[in-house]
Amino acid sequence: MTWPHGVGIGWRPEIAGFVAELPGLRFVEVVAESLAPAGPLPAGLAALRERGVTVVPHGVRLSLGGAEPVDPHRVAHLARVAELVDAPLVSEHVAFVRAGGLEAGHLLPLPRTREAVTAVVANVRRAQAELPVPLALEPIAALFDWPDDELDEADFLTEILDATGAGLLLDVANVHANARNRGDDPYALLDRLPLERISYVHVAGGAERDGLYHDTHTDPVPAEVLELVGALCARRPPPALLLERDGHYPPAAALRAELDALAVAAGHPVVT
Image (cartoon, rainbow, N blue to C red; front, top):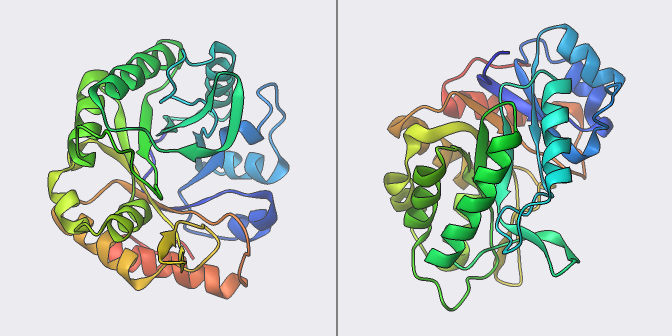
């Protein structure tokens, strides 16, 4: 197993052909729930594995922030997918997606309270006990904050990471989105996060609608996010950065340009 390094891209069936032709590609991320744990892997993903490209499963359905214990069947699925692709780690979100048997269909933000810290830590530890590889946690982009927050984002995340020993999947686009929507300074947040815990980094595009910035994954990466990538790397270069794109896929030349811009901003070799 090889730890993610350099610049990667989220593997999606719609752009599998494009990804297959990236000569310098070292790692990809795949939505864990999109894979059947018994295999076989989709042909494009299997071909990447055969040429030594690292594959990181990224979960979206564990609901680690839920008040209820994490579903052991979902954890088992993530564990089997990690083994299927020989992953060095897996990742999931600091969020909840269900409660009382109801599915939200979205990643929902948690109230930043000590009670929520306790719930997340308990679920993360339950997951870690069954996973064959380390777990990295991703803070989400949120369109609102709960009124009873007790902690700011940096303290909330640090307490969870310290209590669990999990890695940090830092989404720079989420940092930008949250700061813009809250009126905060994204650079100040970078200064207070435990950057030494970063396993890898997400970068994605978004768009402003009705006065709020939405982390769409379907728009180009804005200049402000690339500037944040450069600021992050100046503070502590992360081992790997990944471009997320989940729809409205542009022509190949535009995707290559985004990957190249990310590599330049981070000081990594280009993959195109």
